[in-house]
Amino acid sequence: MDGHIFSGLDGTPRAPKPRTRGLTMVIDWGIGMNAQEDLVVTGADYFDFAKIAVGISRLLSNETLTGKIKHYQGHGIEPFPGGMYLEYAEVYGKTDLYFPAVVQAGYRWVEVSDNLAPVGVAWKQRMIREASEKFGLSVLGEVGKKEGLESTTSLADDARACLDAGSRVVLLEAAELVSENPEIARAVEEVVEAIGLERVMFELPGPWISGVSASGIHQMRRRLIERYGPEVNLGNVSPADLVSLEAYRQGLGVNAGKTKP
Image (tube, rainbow, N blue to C red):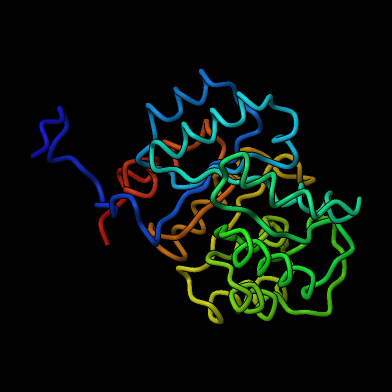
């Protein structure tokens, strides 16, 4: 017993941090320091990563940005800048500025994606290697497209390429998960089969994807947990949804009265 008022009514045990599975990534759209403090006080034990979305790192003052990064890291949470900021740097010919700035800001992790920029797997591998080998950054490599850009590389081969280049985690783009196309559903399963469930983080969709609702997001996270178990890695979790997600992982959410298996 740990002295908690509700000790003994604990739900499904979860591995403590630092953990290698059952990872949760919260998406931070520039929340203020007070909101971040509230998030950490309430749920620091329940999330492992915080994505400072898109290019928001540029919109925060140096003091605010470095303060956010240090605050997260001080609670065992690794923040990282959204991959679309690196894509912006590539499109404008400024990738030489990107990784040095990431390191100077204090980030220790970085995302490498190809959502919108007209780049391929070879570019992504080059960026992953540069980030990890030259700058000592840990990398989350993303596979999948936001805007339906065509690719001749399968999701599974793309995921393998990310790992081969040095990515530690593969993010599976949320746009792939909301498709009802059975071929895409099979492609998602092939990613899991190719690299293992522990290396995949499923990014939940959000309102930036057409037709996605709050109820749809909740239904998807339930389906992922029911399909892969409570230790599935989930990303793009809204700060407001963090604790309710953890409750569902532990069988203490809306599934609290469900019959035990």
